[in-house]
Amino acid sequence: MIRLIYLLICTLIVSVTCLGDLDKETTQLTSNISTTSDTSTCRNLFPEAKEIPAREYFLNLKNASREVSENPIYWYISPNGSVARNGPEAYWYWKVFLKDASTSYPKKFQTIQIDDSRIQWSDYQEYSQAVCDAVSGSGTRRQAQILHGKLLNFKNDWSGHASKWESFPYIETGASIIEAPSPLGLEHYTKYITGGGVIIVGGKEVLDEAFLAAREYVIYMTSAKPEFRNILMANEVRISLFGADNASILPEYKDESEPGGFAMGMTDVSMTANANWLCWPDHWDTGGNPVIHEMVHTINHIVFEELNETYFYERIYNIAINSIKNGTFVTSFTQNLSEGQEQDISHFVGEFWAMTVEGYIMDKPGFKDSHDTRKWIAENDPDLFELITKYFPTEPWEYCKGVDAFYLGDGKYDIPRN
Ligand SMILES: [Zn+2]
Image 1 (cartoon, protein in one colour):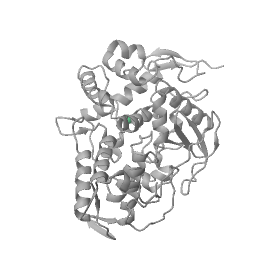
Image 2 (tube, rainbow, N blue to C red):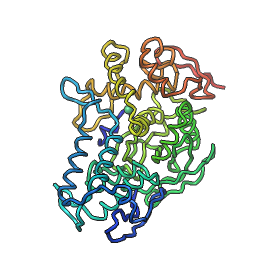
Image 3 (cartoon, helix red, strand yellow):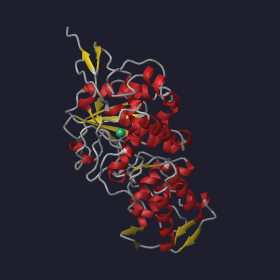
Image 4 (cartoon, helix red, strand yellow):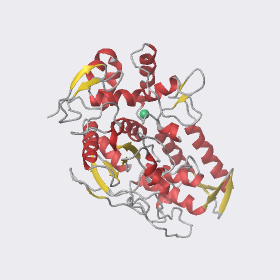
């Protein structure tokens, strides 16, 4: 569960006719985001853009993209060189796309080889139209970033890249589980519910109680910031619940052996969480909660990156390092890391925010080794408390509602049976 999306790796085909002098091409629309087929759209939006040789165009775009992915301004780099990444990458990519589309476009080509990838004209059309659609408001920046990855083979070499799967529609369900409107290839998902701007899906092995619990967590976590819900919904945030030993039961993640869950980054198709690790009446589960934990990471990747939330980026790692060095944050946990990676302080820094907010939200003594209650966080890590309460609710909330248990200390509970 405790794995950053960065460690993990770290659909759309849209109708495109971006440049006025290009042949009109109709492609299948598989997104639920409307796109325009007006051939003059991009020209009208960016009349100053100049045609340049295709190779030059793509090398420029690729180099600018690499600069974003390697921008260390908000990273933590440990003494042995291991990195905890952070920063508004999605916002920076958007600035690259906007500069790209507003200043230049490539001379028409069929296919062109750049480094080890063969670039297709149709992929360029899809990408550039997505940028124009995001500017005009008929599409999202996320779509542009997904199609940019597909165009350049940029960070898209894993099965969960959103260019490889169609989107679920967002249907308001209230607290009712409905039959999943699963796109082609995602028939595994039979159950569906929404809440707080987030789609929650799972297969038949996931109990209804897990869906209702997950929905309740998301609604509570986003209750202080309704605008977050709009951003989560616009960016098609989805939780894939699984009721198995690991995430490989899910069609998008057949090669992943993650037992708890992992977060969703801006170009990912969903986040995952083990439904058997959630808590509801008659299913008392002490310890970490993968929906809450991975949703904290996901809000960081989707909401903070889109908002360019520099207030957060400028503070969180300094708070984490202080808390780790003075022993406030207990670092006895073990991460499920990718092969060849060894746990060091960069992993504690990278996990600090999600683990402590998870403890804050649950507010159950003994469920975490430190930062397990709001009172404890306020007293022992006041700067962190200030940062958490800037984004997450302060209203009381009862996690594991209906579970009647008494805390005995040392992470142990007494659960009276009826
Ligand atoms: Zn984590």
